[in-house]
Image (cartoon, rainbow, N blue to C red):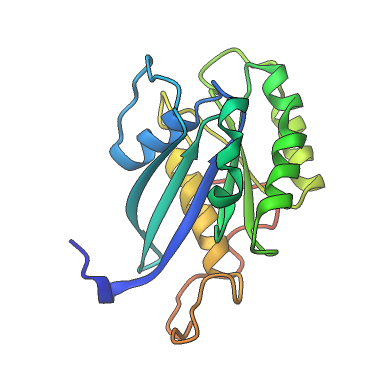
Length: 203
């Protein structure tokens, strides 16, 4: 168990997107390495904490998973406040979930209190027959200066990588996470490890 003084930073990460795209499944796979095909829809907000070792630096993640249904949108402003990273999820087997990305991105831009919040687009459910090509996802991510990865909560593919790459990018973004008392000295993250858009993870 990591001691609190070993933790480099505590980061707030959001997972957003349409209902049914697998946000909760991605979170559960990442935090508990579990997949439940009958995962119930999130009611309001779910919240999990996980400590991640990124290039020898321990980072504590507070990950917020929000309901995709409209009736829970009253939670929105407080949900976005102070977040350093956001994962926008769509389902590669659902054209509608991809076409609905713009309103979610607009909401993120409207409510985020950090102008340099790191955004990642995740195309989930690549274990299914796809109707949205990888190239379409990559183009959307490039257009909006987002990291991009495809994943499957069911098969594990890409899930760990998605969170690791997002955290790496946050740590590499000056002023996004450090408090006044913290110094970024001693960080061993390699600046060239991920491009601004389009992630080709080798995990």
